[in-house]
Amino acid sequence: MEKNGLLRKGKIMNKRMNLIDMHCDTLTRLLEEKKGQNLQNTDCSISIPGMEKAGTLAQFFACFTCLGDYMETDGYEGCYRQALDMIALMEGQLKEFPEALALSRSYGEIMENHSRGKISAILTIEESGILNGKLERLDTLYEKGVRLMTLMWNYENCIGHPNSRDGEIMEKGLKEFGIQAVERMGELGMIVDVSHASDGTFRDILEYAESPVMASHSNCRALCSHPRNLSDDMIRALAEKGGIAGLNFCGAFLGTAKDSKIEEMTAHLLHMIQVGGREFPAIGTDFDGIEEVHMDIPRVDGMEKLWEALKKKGISENQLDLIWSGNALRVLQALG
Ligand SMILES: [Zn+2]
Image (cartoon, rainbow, N blue to C red):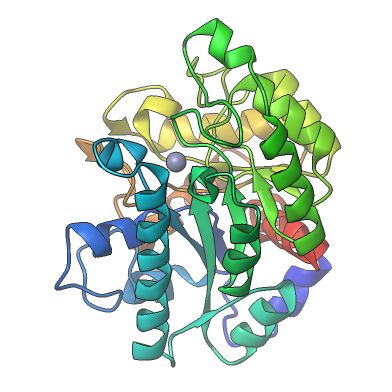
């Protein structure tokens, strides 16, 4: 893409670089399990030194909260507080490492950060049940820099229904409030993320969303029959809307539970290209959100291995550029 051509004139010249990873759960780790660590000094899969080595252009940081943790207390209200804590944690990291990392709220800011040699951090919410029926919370989150909402996690929420092996739940879609939320996201300029949604919710999102839609971290159901993955029909419908999907490194969604294999990653990407076209696939690792026994690529600094494996499969450098960042940039640019 032309935009990638521009990027290569920047500080980072290596074509393997300019990575955009659309999903990680590093903030959850830092907030809960690794309190003494930070993005510079951490054993997390995503770190500033790791991203620098990988040539990361932008990293989406999910503020993920689990209803299960608040089931006995105040449910989604507790989840909302935790999401705000994660945003505050990110704000602290940005203040601590201003030379390496900067918040990005738009395509223009990604380019600006890049020209200054900084990695862009994009804030996202994973589990929009935190809205808890309050539309104004979308405005608050937008003001804080959130530019993508993963509408569902694995629980029913005020928005709609999640992915499920129960066919009945899988067919249920957005609720009335969910439709309002999706419309408000369109007005504000927030990406609607269908990852974790039921098939019914997926279909409703495509019908109602005015803003760009993506599956930030989902693979192909044709290769791995998991409700978290996209069927070929879903891939085609999403691609038709100009949407994209980020390859998820979780073994259970690739094909072999607890084992994250490059061979399966390349198969999913090739399938995405075959069904959704060359402008469909992107990267959404789910780093720090998956607990595998073995990972061929355990950290972001190993992303080059995937690049090389895809090249061996005959994928052109132009297509690789689209997967690494071009397709994600197109969606971010559409956001304004
Ligand atoms: Zn997820």
